[in-house]
Length: 278
Image 1 (cartoon, rainbow, N blue to C red):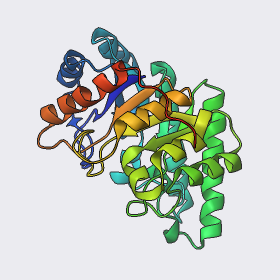
Image 2 (image 1 turned 180 degrees about the vertical axis):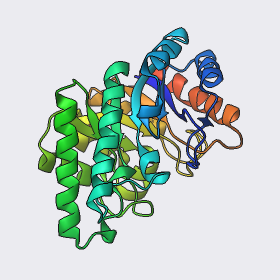
Image 3 (image 1 turned 90 degrees about the vertical axis):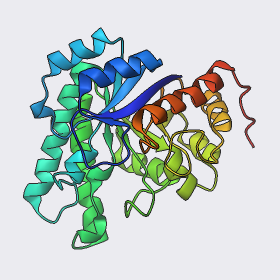
């Protein structure tokens, strides 16, 4: 497994990214800390020069395994379940632009908060139809460009649908595209899943990405989540992709980013014995 950190390429209102803006300096700093990659939060990919971004990543020896899309909801209020069809279509088109950039970067695309709040639709049934239609349209667009998508279950205090690993697995069956998988998040799982380890096992080979933050949304090691056990179970299911830090930059960005890698790198280097399946 490799280590990445979630950052925003531009200033953002999102409190859960360690660095925002000043991309060139941030990438150099993270490469110096020993990170393998960065998860890039991008509000509007049409405002990003893909060739320049590829060159900047290469210059720093970093991969970009994931593009995060939450700013399309958080900053621009675009969602797949808005009652206004113009906004729903704008959300789909925005994600398609993320997919096109992801193709340049060999990245996946995260679909989390872009689903919006289903309670604002005329009915939950209608909201789910809109949601599935949007997921499938984006999945088909991505499939023809060799890009994978991930859906992130989010805790009940930040979303009103798709909370747990089980919810995510059931949703994947409804979507019906093999290029769509899950991104699980230790913080959300600590709230919604009876067992983080069992949720990981349930996702199995449909787990494409894994977010790490501790129980208090600080960096790993600052709360009570057992990351040694999580890493053991990830190994047991054959997960070899990224652990991507998404946490509050507390007490400051530098300390949080260094603390994350200092806590997780030794656990990855230990070659822990896989946890037994209950």
